Image 1 (cartoon, rainbow, N blue to C red):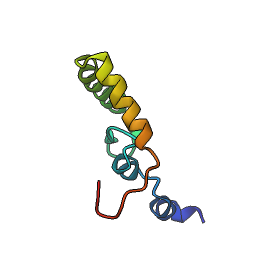
Image 2: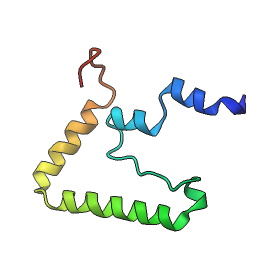
Image 3: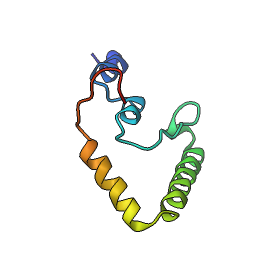
Length: 86
């Protein structure tokens, strides 16, 4: 039922922390207290800051290195690793 959404997300491993642990995303941007819809300005600022920070990091790297990292990352998605290894 709809009251168990958080339990379902945890069981299916679709939380932001799961996506981070699986390497699907680079960062979890915290929401303002009460959620993004309650603080749209703070949410926009947090997203802007994260994008700016990541773009600075990426633009400082040579393009061949970026392409290699991207290729390695995409190829690693979906790989099964033995328990306890990262």
